[in-house]
Length: 622
Image 1 (spheres, rainbow, N blue to C red):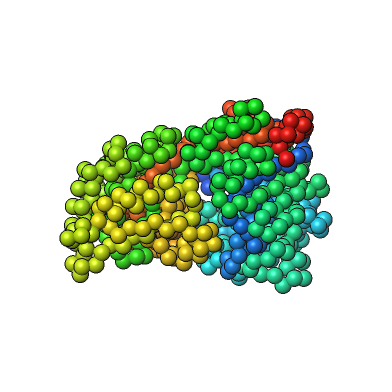
Image 2: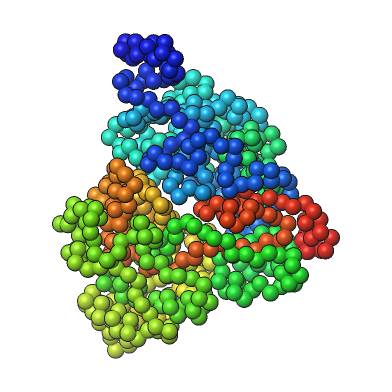
């Protein structure tokens, strides 16, 4: 410490500014910045007035009305024990740092902080908080709120979250009212630590002290936040409004200029998609992001569209498609045989489904990270091969001798006979043979029973043909559509054979891979298949510890090759566009200026009052 004081005095005398917090670093160089990236790259590393994709002069005002399916009985977005939180109920809360929508790699920028400080060793990070941040009730946010929120979540949030974060962050301490330090676990990989600390949500300590509320319980009375919106009026299960806070502390922050433009965000709840779509056609709902190819192709022929009151648009989506499809629950013994999974997957016909039921609007996903930089192709080579050599004794030889697994090809008819013959052969290898009734039975005479669980009516027409093909194969397959609450309860307890779901994918990956695909995440809701292997654990560690982005990409290719071989998700479809329809009173920057990774209709779109008045005069909107 004496040596550090001498060094500090020398630097100060030389006219070089250095924070006293550098004393914590001993002889380690301390970096002070307003942003952070694991790869030392950030689009907005130099100061700017506003984000490139916003209109900084966008007017404030107006209302946007969205429709969702289901209901809600809580405004606490972090409840885990019970309750269904309202859509967008986390909107009042902000994080220490924020990302942007036009950057593929996830740099984080100071929002609630002015600067961060950290040593090259990244043993800790200090957030120098802004002094002007206030909660919606007008009280200042301080370091005590940051420390309290972290400790509250560590005590009461989901076990998987607590485990994951606890493996990264050792402790959090307030150095003074506006300085907070996160100390990292000594043995934790360095990548992702500062980003994780920067993602800390901040809630009000005083409110929790007064109410004795818990993070994991459902409730309608919730802590104030620092964000631009507050909870407004609501009717449980039917509708809720969020109101823009005119006294929001951050309205002139460069990350916030031209954003959060609507005075009111209203969300209406419906029992099914039909009711929600009818409400949009009648003007009760004013913005709709379409997710049904049937509706998109055939449903937009109503008077408001014909009269020019509604805009129907396809806007580009540059995001990496998530690894979605039919997910096998490997926790079920009957689905642990890869040949069984391959056979069941072969009965899904993407070609017929897309052309006949989805109007040819989709492409088929091939990879868990479906871009050239990250997906496995052909035979492994280069750095990817080096990573695979680390696990050669733990993975099948086919990973080295066969090209990366691609989705099966199907014909123009729903039931592809060639694929069914191949599926029967795979089932025979797994010990299933057809009985006199055509049902596939194992050596004990037991029929293979498979349930596909779903809660969305619009999936009926996609899933029923798949079930029919499984029945034709000889599987005792059923399709069971349940209500939203039952679906949530069953999926959270892993009570299913197959669901349509999957895994989130990003242009960069880190410690969250362990939660999604690692042994420690086998019983995590973010791992719907319950997949785990020693080889995956080793490769995930290489991703986490990758010194460069190219190394991380090569390790992801190795994982992608392994996951596609293991075949625990049947790859289905993806779309590189946003389908949106809205009443012609909402505006956004020119398409070429919009954020490629963030549609942002609740963020940087705005309301045109003159157009809205015309629509109201014409009776087009409520």
